[in-house]
Image 1 (cartoon, helix red, strand yellow):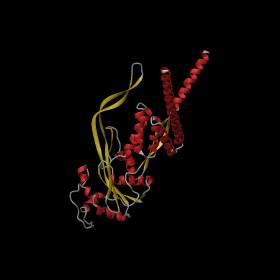
Image 2 (cartoon, chains in turn yellow, brown):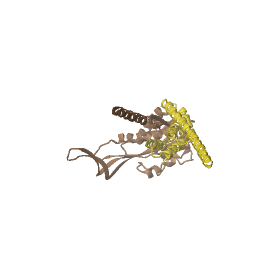
Image 3 (spheres, one colour):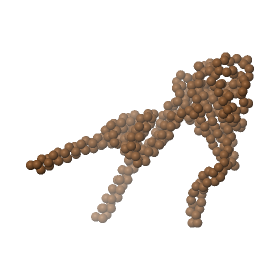
Image 4 (cartoon, helix red, strand yellow):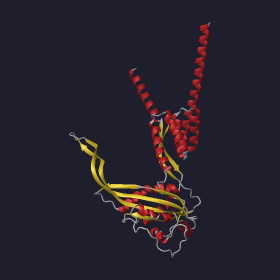
Length: 121
Length: 258
């Protein structure tokens, strides 16, 4: 009887874990769909819509480095430099070895530096 | 069976490759840069003139005024006033200290160097830029326009030392290689240091000041006319100058990821 209870508990636990994983997987899938759609509209120059999509993607999956990278690019095109910087930093935190993100961030820093260049009195 | 396996592997490799290729996408982007100063209250701009010094081969005052006026005409929404270029060095001598009403009868000032050769010579002209009375009067003549003035130092410069160059070498098999070599070189060129001062023509007060420094060096035996070097260096400064007054956009590419 004891063993039966134990088995039942384990089975319930397994079901609970797999259910949670399924929700997370669902969110990830939805986030990926938002990222893909964002890329499509960004290619057509509709950056505001793209930003909205990528903001939804990172809300659904806050561990999605690519979404943060794209969002940073979107913020850059909108002139929102502080937000772009934060998004790039988050993207690199999540995927520090990603050369594409690093290159984007380096290019952004060059532009940002130019925009904030202080007068040399 | 073996062929089928091979085909399946090939299909998998192709699929994987296409998945990798589509994982990132390079897109063109335009990043807007806001102007550093708000010039929305002005509809006109008057590039008055500059205190110029350094090389005598280039008239830093006239050339800078012409170049900046042209750039502003093409890349700014402000109407550029094509009035006479001020000879600020002469004006400084005729202009009394700040706060004193200017009259044509004002006697010549003292302490102004005949030619501007370095920073200390330039410093003598600082009171002129701070003279709100003088600039207000100029502004009134120009109907309260935004005034651009300042100084331009364009000085010859030479240096010597070791520089790293890339050199082609061929090994015993005739293969070409490019190797870095350190060679001692004498080089000469110019340093350009423009200081732009933006003045509110309605009040005569300085709104903003920005200084740049650019330099170029050539091999000592390479002849490069001073005027073309001046334009080469000014070309580097102009985008930053324009971004002070009007919003600019920087074009580039970024990589979007899936």
